[in-house]
Image (tube, rainbow, N blue to C red; front, side, top):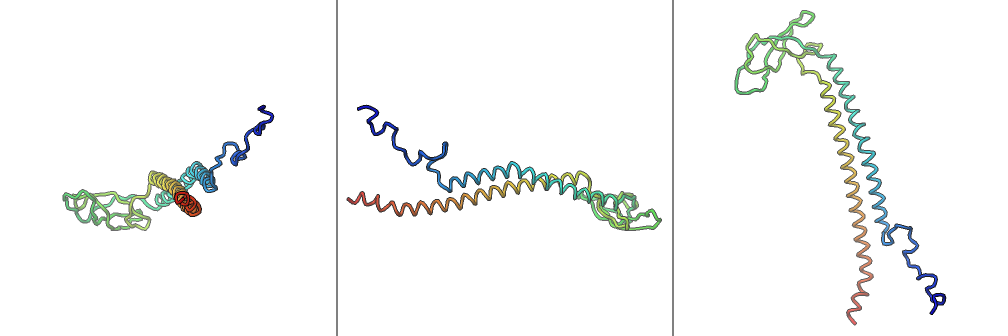
Length: 201
């Protein structure tokens, strides 16, 4: 028999998947395509959004901290004060509160409570930070504090973006898997009677 008279001279009959786009999986479901699309979106978010969020949040925190540094540096200054009470020298290495006295730039004698090292005798001198109003306070924030704050906030922002992306992916998978299981159950309810009937013959 010649090939010209063969029913397959023009090639075998086309199948359902022959018209699918080149490289596409004919068994791919709508949920599978949506999952692939969603995964690509999350990758774009991680690649572009994560560094952008980290840098933006870090710079914002750094600039806010630097404003605090400049404000505290303008409001606080150090003075030399004398202890009016001694501090016991015990095994505790932590600083302890003690009464101190100093004279400000206007000649006014002021008193306050400052943290000093254990064993500092009465009448000893210490350097303390005070405000313009003459209140003993903590040292002003430094540039290192502002830099550390920026890095911490930036790192937290990056972690938040990564955690949010993972949560979105996990939630999407959970929803799609539940839908797939429901579809499989519905299809099996239709197919199972036909299969079981074959064995009852």
